[in-house]
Amino acid sequence: MAESFPGQGYATFLLIKDEKSVRLAPARRPDVIASLWPAEGGEICPQYGVAVELRLNDAMRKDGFADTSKLKLELDGKDVTGKAKLQGTTDMPQSMLHLSYRARLRLGSYKATLTYRGQGGDVRTYTWKFRAEKTYELGGARSDC
Image 1 (tube, one colour):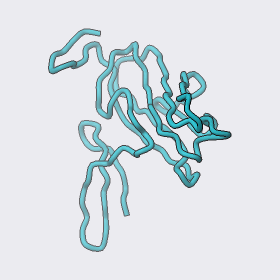
Image 2 (cartoon, one colour):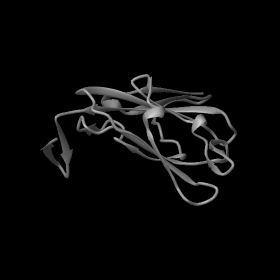
Image 3 (cartoon, rainbow, N blue to C red):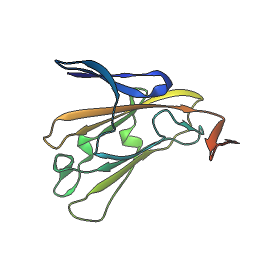
Image 4 (tube, rainbow, N blue to C red):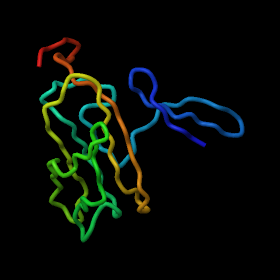
């Protein structure tokens, strides 16, 4: 049995209970998610939003194209999917989809949640946290936004 919960520093851990032990393990991002922006626990400038690049599976496509009715992107519990920009690859069936939502964010902590379909059609979610700040770190140095 595995149960996920956020740890300190916004990292997500799995509490794994089996017949032999109880242990913590870092939660792995699902393979369907090729990339996230910002990264888990990352900092961004307030003028940026969130983005997810997905590896599409058959359950996320209809007639070879990304089926956006099978995806939902939420920011602090608010569905922003309808305001997101969607860009799919030109191969058939489509193999990737880039979902991005740009908005001026207030300073502070955020939680983003992606809801998608697993290969078998089951509904899955992935949640990550980040912060909008006046400065950000790049190459070990802090820069103003």
